[in-house]
Image (cartoon, rainbow, N blue to C red):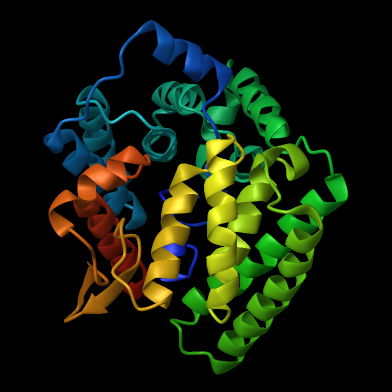
Length: 324
C-alpha cells in the first residue's frame, strides 16, 4: 500500500498505488531540526528520473528492480517522505528488513505522519518484527495526532467524514475504469451535497483554517471546494479566502495553486501552475497555460515538482489503471 504523490486535484480523482491518500502534512520536528543543521541536497535530474522509474516499477510489483533505483535516487538528492516510504515497502517485500527500517526512519524524518496507513500496511509486515520499528511507529502516531488538534472537533470530524466519502466514490470510479454511470451519478450527488454544506460552514465561520479544524481537516475543506466544479462562483468566492489563509499560515500554498488553476480553467482562462491535465492523443498534457516558459519557476515557488515530473507521474498512474 505505497503512498505516492497525489494528482487528485488535477484529475478530479484520488490516486495512490494501493490505498487511501491523506493530505500533505508538515515536516516533523525532527525533520525540521535536521534540515536546519545541514543544507538540503539538490536532486539531480538523474536522481529524479531514478525515483520516477522506481515508483513505476513498484506499481507493477517489481520491487527487486525498484530498490537499486531508490538507492540511487536518495544518493542523488531525492529526499522526501513518499520516496522513502515507497523504498521501505520495496525493501520489506524483498526481505531486506533492516534496509526497510532505515528507509522508514528516513520517511519519518521527512515528515511521514499517516499512522493509519502505516499500521495497516501489509507491505511492512516483516519490518514490524525488528527492534526500532515500534519507536518509529510511535513517532508517526504522535506526529499525526498534531494534525487533528482543533478548536472545533465536531466540524473537524464532519469535514474528514465528507472527505472520505469524496475519496471512496472516486476510488470506486477508478476501479470501474470510469465506465459506471451509477457511480458517476453518486459522485455528483456527493459533490453537490458537500458544496451546499460547506457554503453554510463558510458563511458561519469563514474559511475553516488550521486553528479551527486542524491541518488535515482544512485540507479536506480545500478538497471539497476543489470538487465543487458545478458551482464555479463558489470556487471563485473561496479563492481569496484561501489566499488570505495562506498568508496567515492557515493554509497550503500548494492547495492554493491547485484551486487557482481550477478556477482559471473553469472560467475559461489559461491556468498558472499547470495542475489541471487532460489526455490528448493518448498523452497527459496541461490544459491551456499562461507563460509556459516560466511555469516551473511558478511551480517551484509553491513547492510543486517540475511539470515534467508531474506529467511523468500522470502517465505512470494512467498506465497502472490500465493494467488488469
